[in-house]
Figure (cartoon, helix red, strand yellow):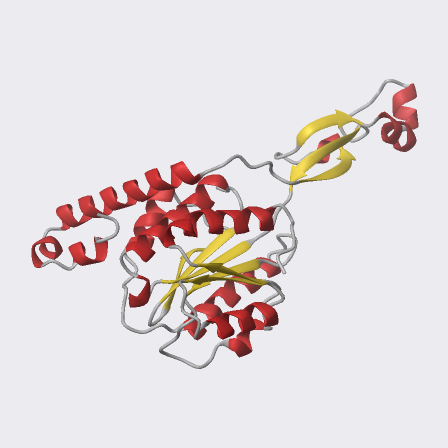
Length: 276
């Protein structure tokens, strides 16, 4: 059903019946989430080690422990008088490492059917495993659409249903998809969420609208290209985008491998591994 969702929703009897249309969308999204659950693996989240006073301990601090040496050095009088407050006690702790990521996904006609369903599975896998990370999602065909901003919190069911309802039209405006992704990258960096955002671009490397997008690649701090399919004619453009974007090219020849490959790439980025 998820594979043929765009075909189903255009049927006259379904278009006229909103309740039926909503039910088909719900079932399709649920099937995608079920498939995504089967792909998940275990992940050890990267952390940063920090030291600070107890009063400033962040809510997401892990493994907090009193730092006696720091406490004695910074608050000796309070220690001697046994008059310690939360402003005098120093702690060592860990916090999850933050790495904003923007996923830019081709949803044009060349990516419909099984490609689109498996792309939805790939997105679901990423967000199931990393629900609290700053991950933005852009979909593009004739135009581009922001499905999720990096700081937005929505349910996975909502996200998958949004993705399924992106209109799959005849042209691929790769330039527009990259331009919108760049806007999200810059907004994430401005908000000070740590390192500049990495971008993962999912495309078959073909565009039928707009200009050659290669000129945009150098504006990305880090651009990873996932090339779908075995088409060799579009391989050079994908390689050029990755090189100019100081990133890497990953070829995904088999559709079935897409969820696992995207999961692996995002996992490495969040662990701080360099993909170049």
